[in-house]
Each structure stands twice: as structure tokens, then as C-alpha cells.
Length: 361
Ligand SMILES: [Zn+2]
Image (cartoon, rainbow, N blue to C red; front, side, top):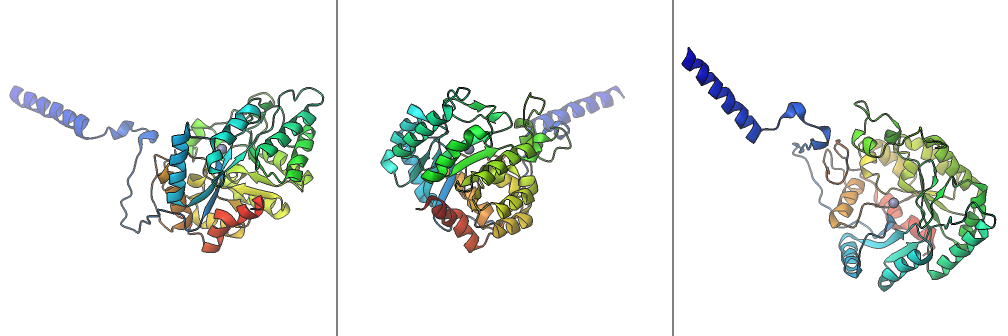
């Protein structure tokens, strides 16, 4: 009997040793560590280069030196990116330094400036800000952005954020009108997607990103999602001669009809599709129909660095009809992705035709 017990104990120990070494403890597996590999034997499309030349309307000043700029241009050549818009958020010396940094590749990069909110609480600010905008324009600015308001005002601008100032603030009017006069489109990020406003708990559909980007609506004076969309709509409505680009589908991926209605109403409103590939990909048939319908209003964008692979994943999502594939390293979500199989006409418009029209290239 005693020998049998010892034998069983050794066996149990051995089993737990084997489990620890060779298997995962799935009862304690965290959602962030869930890395399924698709098991389906179905077509997988390898896309090395975009089907048509691409203008990327949402990128930033990522490279740290000339060599990294060179490397980026090489990657752009390999993947079919004809030109990248660098949204600097900046004015003054920091804007000028970005212009200088990319001056060796004038035909490959357009540099966009910000608004200068320094002294925005003092009388006469608007005239100064307009003068700085004109200075940036003469230096080569091709647009303004990325402005950004997640509820507390224009927080993205460098060197001075415009806290408490929303895009429909009457103080903004002279700046926005000047953009219209100078043909500078305004790229603006308002709000976050719906997941970030839901409780970050076990019922949240997009928990991984919802937890990371959760919006705290208890902050004093903060505007909610719909109020922020309204600030954008107000500005677009009263400035019909200025073109606006709402970043990331205006953060309405969970209800694209909201953006559709705005598109139906305002000819001067566009949207970029940057950094929302994982949000639109789980509902490919709905998004296909939306993007085909509003193909004249959407602009390709990335906002996800400069890696060769990043571009290819965006092309696979836009161009292919692939199903149930994962890109865990690129997107935080736990769900699989699907290709949107956009038509050539729509791809051409989103990749370059809309952008060319907008930039009067
Ligand atoms: Zn951005």
C-alpha cells in the first residue's frame, strides 16, 4: 500500500513537472497572452506592393536621423508609397527643423504644420497665430495637422497645447478661414472609438485597446464622443471653403453611419483610414459597402510607423478577400482579421485620386 502511494505521488509530481515544462497553464492564461494561430487551409494573399501608387495622409516624423529617412524612402519604394504626409503638430523652430530634415526628398514628403496656441488666453492671439501659419506656409507647409481633441481641447499642438479650445471655438475662425485661403487642408483627430468609452471590463468587445486608451469622462470639462463629433461638424459647417480630414474615420468605426451622414451633408469633409484597420476588418461586408459608397471621401493613412511589413498588412486588408488571419504584433485586439476586397476603382481613389484632388497636385 505504502509503495503504491509513493508511486502515485512520484507520478503526480512527474505530471506537474511535465505540465510546467511543456504545456501552458491555460486556466490562468491572460487575454493579452492569447496568440491563436489560424488552422484553416484557405487562400492567403501575399501583397508586396500596393496595387496603385499611394499617398499616405497620416504619418509622423518617426526617423531619428538622415539614414532612417533614407531607409524609409527605400521602404516606400518597395511598397508603392509615392508620397507621405508628415503631420508634425508643430510651429516655429521645431516645424522648420522637420522641413529641413526631409528637404532631400521634397517630392516624397509633404510637411504639415500645427497651430500655435501660445498666448491663446490673451487678446490679439488669433492674429499672431495666423501670422505664424502664413510663415509656415511660406516655409513649405502643405496642410495643418494633426490637430487632436480627446475632450479637453487641442492637446496635440507643439510647443503649446490649446487646452480648453475646441475646433468650433469662435477664436479658431480666423485660422480656419486662412487655411481655406491658402488651400491647406486641416487633419483633425476628434474623440476616440466607442470601445474606449465603455467600461474596460469582461464585457468590453475591444478590451485590449479599450483598457489602454480608456477615456476618463469624470475629468472636469471633458466633452464626450458625440459632443466632440459635433464640434467637428460645427467647424466644417461654418467654414465651407476649408477642407477637413477627420482622422481615423472620425473615430466612428463602431457606427460608420454617423460619418456617412456627415459625408452626405458636407462636401468639404474627408476622412483618413489610418490606424483603424483592426477596427474595420472584423465587419468586412459592412465596411466594404461603406468604403465603396464613400470612396470619394476616404484617404489612405497609416499612423503606425515605417516598417515594410506594416504597409503590406494594410494592403492585404484593403485589397484581398482573405479570411480569419491574425496580426497580433500590430494590433492589440484578440480578434481575427478579414480582407475587404475593395474594387480597383475604390482602391485608386483611396490610394491617390482623392488625395491628388484635395492637394491640387
Ligand atoms: Zn497620428
